[in-house]
Amino acid sequence: MDAQTLSERVERLRITFRSGKTRSIEYRQSQLLALKRMLTECSSDFDTALKADLNKSTFECYATEVGFLLGETNHALEHLKTWMQPLEKSTPVFLQPAKSRVVFEPLGVALILGAWNYPIQLTLGPLVAAIAAGNAAVIKPPRTAKNTFQTIARILPQYLDPDAYMVIDDDTANDLILNERWDKIFFTGSAEVGRIVMQAAAKHLTPVTLELGGKSPALVDETANLRVAARRIVQGKFFNAGQTCVAPDYILVQENILDKLISELTWALHEFYGDDPRESDEYARIINVKQFDTLIGYLSDGDIVIGGQSDREQRYIAPTILKNVSPEAPVMQFEIFGPILPVLPVKDMDHALQFVQQREKPLAFYVFSENRAEVEKILNNSTSGGVCVNETINHLVVPGLPFGGVGNSGMGKYHGEWGFREFSNARAVLDHETSFDPSLRYPPYGTEKLNRMKKLMEMRIPYLFEGLVGRLLRRQGDKILQFIK
Image 1 (cartoon, rainbow, N blue to C red):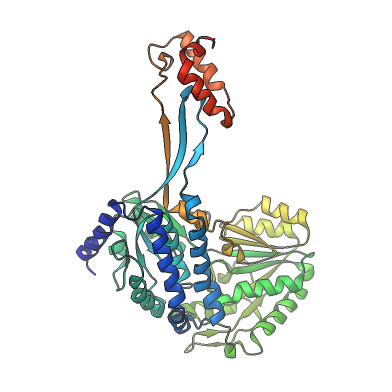
Image 2: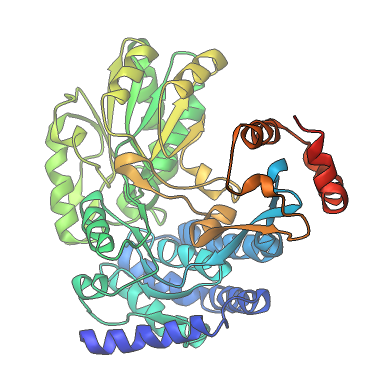
């Protein structure tokens, strides 16, 4: 669509938002319920689209896309009333009688830019949060996953209020979309494009959430349960053929157990995908030829332990483990985003920690160890968007945990209440009564007033007694102040 048509359609949403229609809890619940019906009634449509785009198995489609979103939607419906409640806060004595609170108000019309690797989850997950927070929204599904893009564009308008939620269902350029003035932009994708989004948002000082990626490390020490560690790393890495933003990007393993870990990783791959993963119903495909060609270039950056087979026409790359990889190799410089897993030996976990600290802050960080002191030491001396101990990727399915990056891996958090707050303005409200208005606060000042104000500002009253203090000041405030010297 052209710029004028886009602006006119966005303005329709803005008019709806300004009317207050999207703010009531009843409206928010009705739209979340409609989204839930869509996910349930159209699950087979989404399965078909995801199969065509990424060869996702039925299990992956449900666990990481439709089922995941049903969980998010149900969680929002269950807790929405609580999230919307104002947060009562303590008020200083010198401002009594008064009440302070934080109210969460919707930001306005949000733009949601989804990502192709989990095209339903990463497009509609932020939408759940936007609806829960009372916003209107424009949704742009990822065109790279063309079948899922078309399915979302066709189905979503049949369920949600068209006056408040719009899907961009054509090839409207991102530059045109970003040129609009938005009240919030939520982007999931690469750091490179994230910078472009942030630059566009800066023109209007629009708040942004950037869910990016990076090289998420997995650290394995000599105390780790290697059988479990290998199974969980392989599952987290090779879900969706490695095209997962929180997939373990590389392993740093204590050198004295390198061969044992590689043996367990190899065993896990055979257990999960058989002798020929090409024939497995559980193994996905690379999204397009461009990404395929990039990944093939990484295969020569180390010695192939297992895997390495490929088929360009089918966009197939076998799950591959590399060893003897240089830290300076290209596979260690860029987020892999595919089924290639470098395994690098380190002397100990101190060296592993130093290796990670010298690089950009990752989106996820995985530690495998049975030594709790070592685990705490690593956590206390590292930074990442999220962490799993003896696990991979599953921190993002816990509704109460924030999901998002830090530094180069992104900014802002969502899922559950964190998403509600990400799409809200936390508005400070001070409700100050007029029944007590001492001259102490007004000019002219002087030594006596200053000393009394110092005393008042230094006073600390437990929150439970603030109401009592307020009542006393309301009735006898001037007399009470006379006793404060």
